Length: 176
Image (cartoon, rainbow, N blue to C red):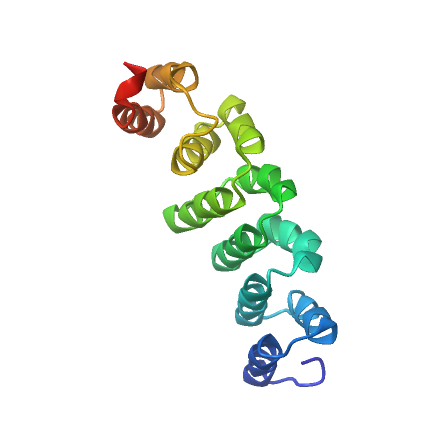
């Protein structure tokens, strides 16, 4: 993994390490999270997700801020699989600009299922963060979500947030 200049060889090493149990394999995969090649970092994120390797949490949180959208997406997916609620503020703050990355971030929030931490996103100034928190809370079974939290968003100046709030309110006739 560290000696080869071949991208394919290093990527194959990550996939081989994914099949190996034990601490040494997890440590080696964590090193691959720092490789200069995107596809190797993506493979390493997938490996971390498969093993739910919480030892990779600090590096994954860094990756949400610095990486290409594709690598950020796989980092978000790994964070969701790990399930540590410490990742929620970073996921909300990551501010994905494209729809695919936004979907992965929302799904990670749903997997983590930390209602209280996710609900803090409803108070953010960014309508995109509010929308991600709103969808995640709704998909967690609606825990942490009530009419009092959704109603103000129905008057949002952001049409996408307003439409999302309307969609969620429509799914809760008991709020009527």
